[in-house]
Length: 334
Image 1 (cartoon, one colour):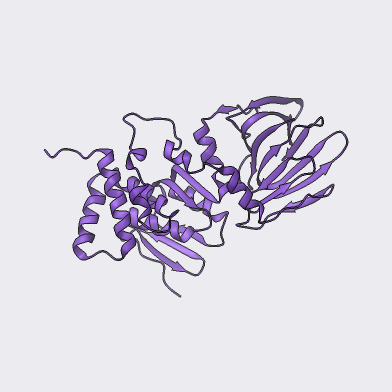
Image 2 (spheres, one colour; image 1 turned 135 degrees about the vertical axis):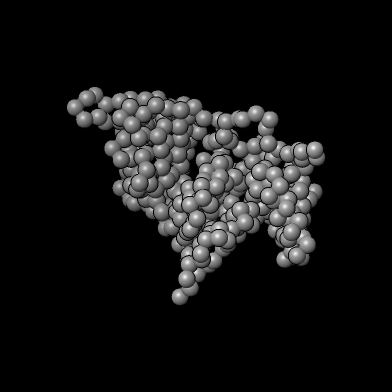
């Protein structure tokens, strides 16, 4: 019986294939070898997708040579909690510099009661007059109102990251009837149309007040590295690792990070940032897990990587990208 390849072997092969694919179309012999490698081990697809996601962040496949260490992406011997590898966490190092570049998109201190918003695909950093900042994600809107006794922000829709400077007045964020209060913290709040309010505290402490019908309001205190999804009548805070926090906040640098989400979920995430829509015809393909770091504004590049890794067909018509299995009939062209 042939010796089974190690995770290092598979990741090294994945980086080599990624570099080769960048140089141009494969010859028939190379295509057969590539398909044989891709289907020979269940770990190969995930390894290739990770290598390609790194490649998409660089200018050429050469970046995968001297600087790419497959050992950083070796699969663990035993299951571990979902999160980014050490290498993945380093990809977001220097986030302050990235946030500064985002600030160039739009900067302004809103007047009392002023509304600040972003369009689809836009990220906007808004400094407040007390030294705090609000980083608005795509398609989001807030209203800011400061008074002598309170710093108040209403999240009307979308997603925002608040960096709250210390002040004698409490900093209050109101979203969907919930009040989130702090004196100094860094936290993310998300409210999408079809989802419950999602609060993630990166640092500091945030007090949450949740109103209840015919009962006293529920009060909770969240410290750093804690998440609260307010779907239940009595939601429970969940501790999370710093790596998960980093992955959840990748959008601050214009990235989307996936660690086992289905392709259908990934397509939904891309739809928030671009008018280009990803449609997955085959339901089995839609359930395939995705792992990697991708540019949020490049759904076509993401789809190309998916098509190669999962042996799928890609058809693009205007703002629609269709992914299907070879056995699935492609949509009729107009």
